[in-house]
Amino acid sequence: MKLISMLNGIYDALLTLLFLVCLSLGGYVFYDTLQVYQGAAQRGTMIYDPAGEEAAPLGELSDACIAWLSLEGTNVNYPLMQGQDNLEFLNKDPYGEYSLAGSLFLDFRNDALFRDPYSLIYGHHMEGGAMFGALDAYLKRGFFEKHRSGTLTLRDGTRYPLHLFAAMDSDASDSVVFGIGDREELAARIYECAENLHELPENTRIVGLSTCKDAVSSERTVVFGWIDDAEVKEVRQ
Image (cartoon, rainbow, N blue to C red):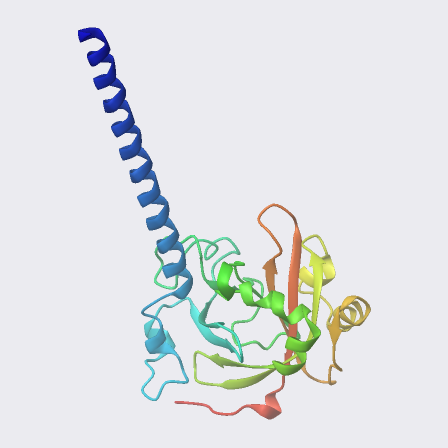
């Protein structure tokens, strides 16, 4: 009887230990998930949102902060960074701290004032439409037709209306889409492959927004917009 009682005690202790381990793991997973989505929300950066009445200058956020990007009808309303390469802000928030959600960032090969014929912006695909998780919606005709506007505000206060004109799936190996090359060649590829498409006006500059389709493949969702110097809304000195 003593042996059975001892074995029962050991069994109960093991069950208790297993419960505590599972509880700890569950707590860690919850904390880790919370940290990821807090990073995606980038709390604390909203004081720099140029749409605010008393927005702080973007330059005070970080030397690497070059602009602010917002897309109408989505959760995309974030500072835009540019690193020394395309890995710097892949897992770093606008304050320079580690974050799985990373930041939205402009290709390091592009001009920070968006004077290139084609500028390419990257962002992680997060659930709930966070970061560039919202780009999937533009592949749906109904959403695309109703939400084709955004705003790109540069560090110096120059504010461009961003007109979204195309959405498509691509592959990261496509040197036309991801090579920051010839505008006309890119326009031809967009007209050939886009699932949703409107006319691209001449003498405008293209801005691409790219995100992963999933965590394991090289497929990308890319939404394209155009900006025009003739439409600059404001320059805040």
